[in-house]
Length: 290
Ligand code: NAD
Image (cartoon, rainbow, N blue to C red):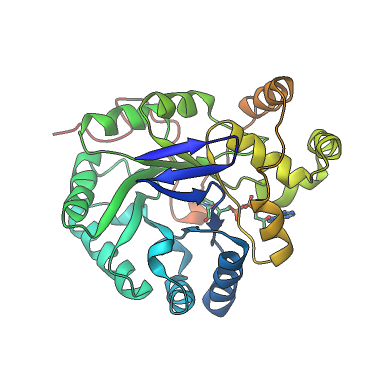
């Protein structure tokens, strides 16, 4: 069970407290990744996000050698072409082996795969959870249509990880997840650092004595979601986790919400090896549940 304290930017997962801001590790590999995780641990980060796609399990394993693995909440994701049950099991075992850990905190489906029924994928994950190798199950890059179908399976879904930043958010999905006690983790929360060029975030930062990045992350936290910025710089890591000592007003939140809700999301294309599936209707988003 995950409880969120927006005000103090903290969350409790099964009774253990973590800062709401996690560390994203996309594009961090090998020694760079290991160094970033050790640095993040010093700065107080306790949630780490990775994926098979990021090819950095060795770096995470190297960092964990000198850390207490149990004090970290580690999330990984299975790539969409490995969503069939036997592949889920294979990817999961390889994930544990490469990270040299014996359980994963959260395991997510990285992107929906319209060719594989979601009940099969979720049931394979549920077996891993029952075997105590996995604590929580999640989905990534989904819409409300995907979620409605996934919830019908009856496997508990704890996390949804989706794109969310002050230039885009899927309000319908965030509201849906809140209603179903599913926690939303915001990927690309700084829109790859583009927040720097934004006059509104700059202005709000100046007013609150904070940076534009901190305003972006605080906006996510006050929406009850968990920001997941990526960084390898100590300065940025310290800045990104330091968002508990100010609050955006109702009017400021409304302004940012309105703008983000009107924004557009990142689209996948054939250069990523597939086309994303955001446009699928409820009927089409996954094959009929058996
Ligand atoms: P991001 O918005 O976190 O931007 C990262 C960039 O911002 C980096 O270049 C970093 O140097 C810079 N940055 C970090 N802190 C800053 C600061 N305070 N001021 C100025 N610049 C700063 O984008 P991202 O890294 O793509 O996403 C974050 C994480 O989300 C990833 O590392 C990954 O773990 C996750 N993610 C998940 C998915 C998914 O499909 N589930 C997709 C993309 C990313």
